[in-house]
Amino acid sequence: MRFDWAGLMRLGLRGLGLKPAEFWALTPAELLVLLGRDGAESPLGRARLEELARAFPDHGSGQDTE
Image (tube, rainbow, N blue to C red; front, side, top):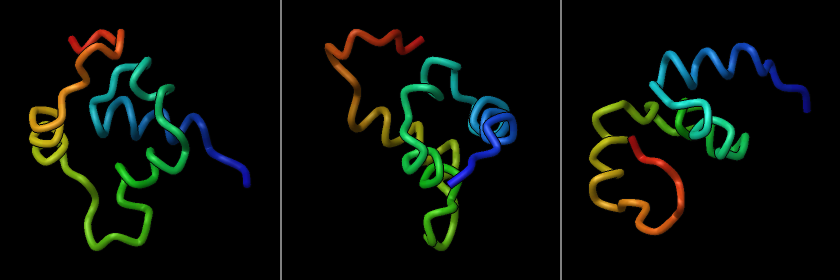
């Protein structure tokens, strides 16, 4: 399967507001889920993403969350 990395980066960084490290830490499948391309009825919006991040924080992951 071929990926349009430039297009996916644009969607991830600009559309979803991900930081480069966050983008590259995702698997292609995770990115497609965030973009709503997994067959779900609607994409995961920024508000829901932030709600999930608050509910399930990444403690001790060694990743910068700011």
